[in-house]
Length: 85
Image 1: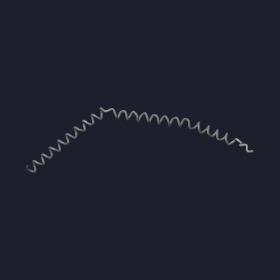
Image 2 (image 1 turned 45 degrees about the horizontal axis):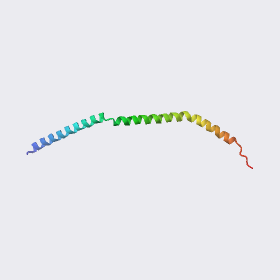
Image 3 (image 1 turned 120 degrees about the vertical axis):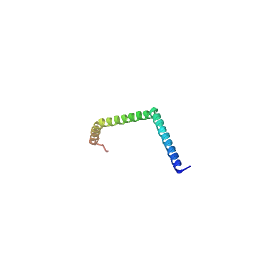
Image 4 (image 1 turned 45 degrees about the vertical axis):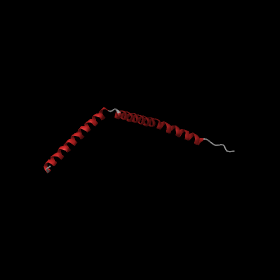
C-alpha cells in the first residue's frame, strides 16, 4: 500500500471516529435532557436556599428585640443586691 493510500485510509478512519464521537455525544445529550435526576437536584437546591433565606429573615427580625430584652434582663440582674450573712 502506498503512502498516499495509507494517508487517505487514516483520514477516513479518523473521520469515521469523529462521526461516531459526535453521534455518541448527541445520544448522551438526549439522554441527559430526558433524565429527571437533575431536576430533583435543582428542586432540593431551591428548597434549601429558601429555608436558609427564611432563617436569615427570622434572625434579622428577632435580633433587635432579643438584644433589647437581654439588655433589660442584664440591667435587672445588676441592680439586684445579694444578701450576705
